[in-house]
Image (cartoon, rainbow, N blue to C red; front, top):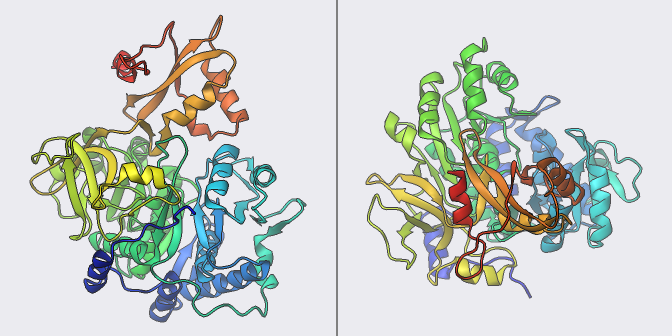
Length: 539
């Protein structure tokens, strides 16, 4: 039977407990503690509602009873594809209260990705909005459920639309009236949430995070960011991203007793107004948004004086852009973020000098994070030399979910995770990201697995051969370029390929930004596509 959770060796686990990194408390206990300490203070608000810590606890308990009344039990996996709404938090805490496991999906995922995740996780439920960004998620859910019979429950935030078996999120509280929940449905060493990998092998893998390790992730990040009860975090990026959710993000802010403000979109004009209205102290964006935020800050009349920290991460931030951010957003401090849903999180420190803030991607948040920077033979390289980043620690996974073959290749015998990132380590311990080992394109923080997209494009009748390559881009970090050899006649253009991928149920961000027509595909001596030669054409 496939392994859901690769556990830490007993000696390592005992060490993490003894050091206080792992406390043995679950997320329901975490929320109960927050209610005791902060009660009526505001925990979360969006454009529609505001919830105190007590109200968040009460509403999540009511929804938990409804989920339990539906028949959802401990250990079941539930796909979650909700936008930045307070109900995301209500649902998340409701699921962990009954021991069910939220599976975070991305807002742009469509039939291909959701079906894959449903099958891989064995999900029994799927929670969606009725419509979001002019897309009807109910139609998507109906298509996925037709392919995945194990998906028994579809819960809709909004109008279920009359689809058989769909239930409105608003009905859950009434459905569970009188239901008695188990006192403790999960242990701290069990899976709390399944996050998504970048999907470098074609489709995303699932990352199991336990209550113990994920709670420490948020606590340690919040400490580095110096969060407290006066902290107000603005979630501009999708809440389902690990970056937004717990770096320190939503969970880290709540754990410090702060308030979370959920933005419906990352538009700087709208977000700046939220910063002024709610006296936001910390927010996080990606490098793709940095240029438009820089433009807006030059002309805005909004009062941004409350902002102390502007995090930028999920992709490499150009040094020149970083320097502009430092200058134009002062006195707010730029904090560079380099992390992964698999665990290791690196942050620049608020007291770092300007050059360090502008040119590095931070250093590990925990003294217990172990780092190796190695050459292709796994020999450690000298400080300042590039090499692949390997890591292990109290919040870094020891194995992907149900992926034994992949785990055998991507972890060292002594448990170090091979990140696939090429970095240089400075004398101060800060990391500088210089590239990736893996065949993956990082388009503004959205990870595109070239193998997956190439597989879909090869299904087009007009394509004989195709290679997807990343091209440097000042705004997105990278854009995707499809090198296409036509089957006969003229090769399909970019618009045709975009429509083709849409019809195949592929997320829109995976469509190539540019299409180059070539006569023959360059090959290596081993007969494989020579992507290095193709990339040189883009230099």
